[in-house]
Length: 232
Image (tube, rainbow, N blue to C red; front, side, top):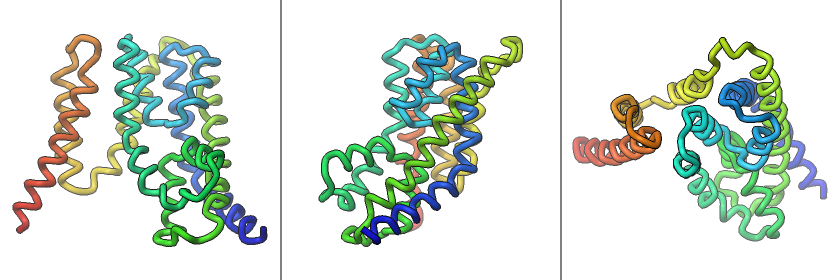
């Protein structure tokens, strides 16, 4: 239908605009996976099946440090909890779609396409062409992510082991986190998590990351309540 084609093309153009941010993130993720010693085939399988950059970087960092599989899975799960909120918020937009279409949306639901989708449709949950727009958004982002992860893997495997590329994963997390520190609540949560991670570095089973995440979340929630009381 003309409307569906129009929305798909609009989504495709919007998705292409995101690639400038996807390229460096995918490259760093691929390099980090190579530095962690993950074989290319397994690394690409992880990229396709997981398709969540932040969770992949968290898992890769723990794999490189020799953490148990349960801790790796738990850390990835905690990092991906935001996707549950994304899913709940856009459910009204796709509730009437077929199961196949909803599965496509659930698999390709990541940060930037989610934000652009809501910018376009906002409160217009009944507007036509929602799936086509989201699908148009998702295609270039997914293809670019897989291609740049593969390129990062190739690059990382070609570099000398003496270069010690293990820093790639934590460096990427720092680069992603700093722009988010826009108010005192986020600064308090991030600062407490960072201090906890340093102090808990020696915990067995690499549990420092999980503890730091829990402390950061708790401090963020308590700080929000404190600041609300303070401003009343």
